[in-house]
Length: 258
Image (cartoon, rainbow, N blue to C red):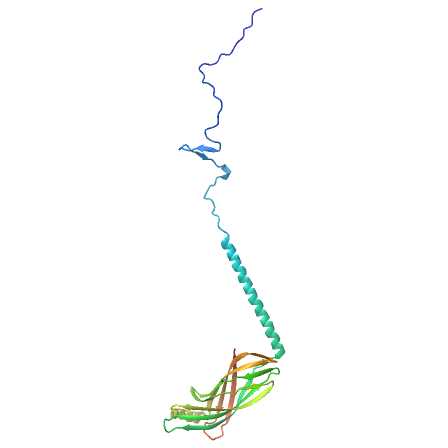
């Protein structure tokens, strides 16, 4: 029996020697730059196609919201105060039923209306009868001092005076006789104008103006001081001393100011 031949592999002398696998020179997920430094590669889904968005701070928005809340609370409180004040005023109006006082001029007497021969000035003295009516049932009126009353013809002041200090109760009518005096420079021109007015129309228009400070009493409560103005238009037949003066018409208007 023939001997079997054994074939042994012969190493390839020309083949390069095998080297064991080693770690890569460049880490994974990086690429090598031209300078030799590895550059980290971002995942494809994380790469941005444009500039990254800028994140704004939320502090200004919080400040604005705080300011808006403060304004809303302030406006709400003001509105609530206005509503409460309106309710109080409405209740007082229903309880006291306030009405404006009424005034009228019922008489006028000229005690002096003379022209001076020295300086041509005109001296005038009037006694004016004024009726003040308080129509309120539960409201009284305190007339304080410091009032000022004047009588005018056109733009010329003839005389002046003042109301006395007094208290007018509920549903009360008070008649006042006010002495008023004055002096007009260049009285000759005034007398000439008055004579022409009387000859043309048969009467002389006058204006009485009054400024007065009062305090209103609601029950036992005294309110703050208020000022009012009165304007009375009256027409008389003449202006001469020691003669009966007839008032042909009279109308007064009242204006109140806090």
